[in-house]
Each structure stands twice: as C-alpha cells, then as structure tokens.
Length: 347
Image 1 (cartoon, rainbow, N blue to C red):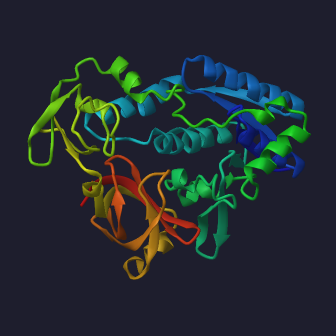
Image 2: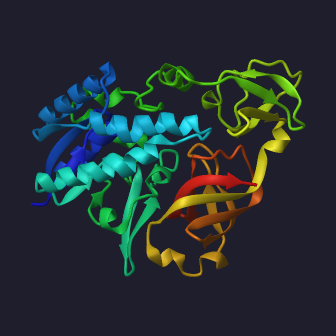
Image 3: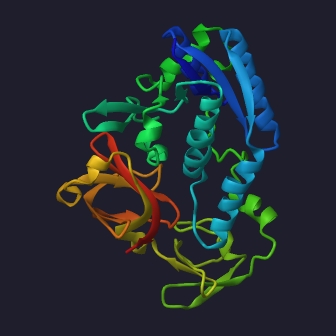
C-alpha cells in the first residue's frame, strides 16, 4: 500500500483530498502546519484533527513558525520596504509546502505528498508536466509554477477533476461538518486582509515623501513608500479631481508617481528567477505563441517570449494593466504551465 502525506489545512479542499486518497486505497497520514501564532492557526489544527479522526487516519502537527517568520513574513515585509509587491503564497509553496513537507514525507516514510490544490500533474516521454485543473474558476496552477521534476514526481492532487461543489459534497457525505467552511481569500498571516495595517505594525522607520504626477508636480504626501502598490487608487489621500492610480514607486527619490488609467498599461514584462516546469519547454520557445498572466486574479494575454541571461521577456499582443514588480509572470501553453518567474520590470 502506497503511503501518502497529506497537507491538511482544516479546510474543505484538503479534507476532500484525504478522503479521495483513502477511498482509492492509499495509506494516508495527515499533517497540519503551524505557521503563525494566531487563533485561526489553532482552529485549523483542530478542524484537521477532527476530520482525521472521522476518517480514521493518523494526524500530526508540524511546527514551522520560526521558518515561516524568517522565510515568508520577514521577506514579505522587507520586499515591501523596497517598493516591490510580493506574492507570499508562491514563496510559501516553494519554501515550505513543497519543500519542508517533502522532508517530512521522507521522515515518515511516505512515498507521495498530496495537497488540496486544484491542479494536475501529468507525465509523458519527456517527464512530468503541470496542468490546469478541470474547474477553471478554482485552478491554482499559477501558484505552483516553481515545481520542478523532482517535486512533481512525488505529488498527487486528488481533487484535480472535481468542481468546488463536488468537493464540498465529498466532505458532506462523510459527515464531516466543515463541508460548509468558507474558502480563505486573504493572505493567511493577514486574516483581516488589511495589508497596510499589518505593514505599519512592523515598519516603524517609514519616511514620508512626495506624491507626484508624471510631470513631477507635487500632489501631496505619502506615509511611506512601503504602504503602496502599483495600480492602487484608494487610500492615496489626495484630491486630484480625476481618477488617478499609482504608476511607479520610485525608491531612490522616495516618490510615488500617479497617472490616469490609460497610462498604466505596458506590453513587455521581464521576469527573473525563472523556473521551467520541464526543460523540454525551452526548445523553440521563441517560435511559439503562449498566454501569460501577471497576477493570479488577472486574465491571460497572448504573446511571445524569449529566455535570455536567465531572464524571461514576454511581449504581450495587448497591453497589460498595472504590472507590479514582485508579482509573478506565469506562462501557459494551452492548459500546461511552461514556466514562471518574479517580475522585475515592465515597459
């Protein structure tokens, strides 16, 4: 019997993953990560333990608080200090969910690692590939572009073929009361969604500076460049007489540059720290048309890309709005994730 370590967050998706695996004949060990000292974290552990008891599977808790503070939260704060907008979920997947949990899988003699992500792992003659989930509205492949062949060969996503409604039914039919639990839509360590307040509590040396228009005219003062992001409209504290947005965070001048909506668009996006899911994708890369997205919540756009000096340059056919440094550019070939990286420039 194949033994699988299942990351159980206490939510519906990971609970359904554990159910599907057990009913498919796997030996399941559930693990819940303790990442931060907050009420929600302990409630998640409680819910995961309850679900595990109902299913009759072993459950353990992995205390990653120190690592999470250093590698995720501190990095999150320090990145904002540089005028860059990070995506902590992508970093957490790479560093902890599919890094530390695989080490734990080895420790507990688990051949495979599983989570409740909506995505697919497939295999062909060249190796493993990462594919969108069937439920396009829940697809999470964007967050998983950093997965490599060594990780993919040990991953199994049991709910890849299910819709959210079907996943809830799986949990409900087992009599597990969390089947109605709401999805988490915020960063896990900012449960109220107030990123600015979270940063203000941790950045006490922020310097005020000028808010200017594209011509350099001073429109007002900002509270610290760390508390803003490209594309932001609300909370600017100025009356411009028209709709204006953050176009640029100039860390050298400590200025925030505003513009009207039509000036927020760029065609070319440059990304670094590139991961190719399969090395085969590098072949004739610049001869194909792909789609790409610059944030999880954004629609994809068609274009061409090239890989030069460890950087990916993607030329969109149609301009993309409010591309922010620090977010991830993820490239698709139809339903397959080709590669991705951290955005460092756009023009």
